[in-house]
Image 1 (spheres, rainbow, N blue to C red):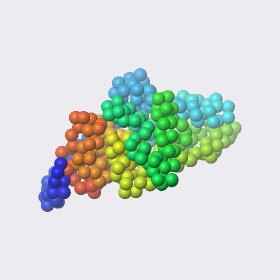
Image 2: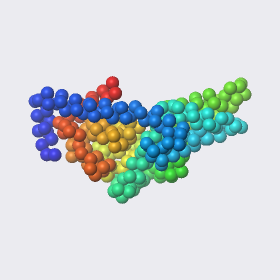
Image 3: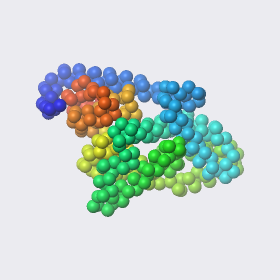
Image 4: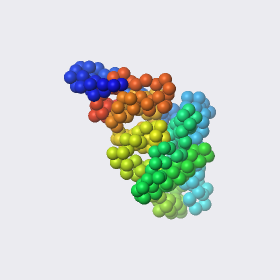
Length: 315
């Protein structure tokens, strides 16, 4: 796609052409938003039934297993541990943000396995991570080693359909504890036991030490060099998704959903907003799907316009 700068100049000189391109891309984003809007309610329905064809048996089994695992961990921290586990599981499932995050984690691992099967990518040690571990900067190397261990644990947890409380983002841990309070409480004594469990869980929690916390610190610490993390081949899925979220100023769970088949326009726009050239954007799309094509007109779009389109999606 030579002549990128020339195309950008042409676009600037022909605002009507740019408006037409943006209208087409906005339309594709709107279609993607319709799909995203159905994810949580469809997931809730399928998790409550035996009909799992739409989202795949393996994905649904992992989502169901991980939510159940969180509920069991929470209930086990309450003295006596004899609360309504089913009610707590349902409360977590009914929280769209919590359900969406667990789904995104499962999709991330699905992507990791896909890249391993299709392109022989190591699910834990990517070339970029290997370079960071070998960095002459002791702080960077130590952080990379911690993430390496965390990524290995993530893979093991996914295979076992588990999710440690310590790996939840802070806002979702809070939501889970609120759900626990609502299920495990009810009497003065029960409220006291639930409060004690909540205090102990919060005391043990440090978001910066979680896998996602380590990822965020690792990517932001790369500074301008973080552009190297916007390559699935070089960075692997985990670092790539965090770098995409940081560079395109998107929620990481949404960035993960953008790698799904129905959201390729969103992914291309996010990569454009992050500053990647069309050739590099196409490389990422092809890593996901050998038949993928760039959305029409993306080569005429400036990063700020791509970011504006994403920000305006769904509004």
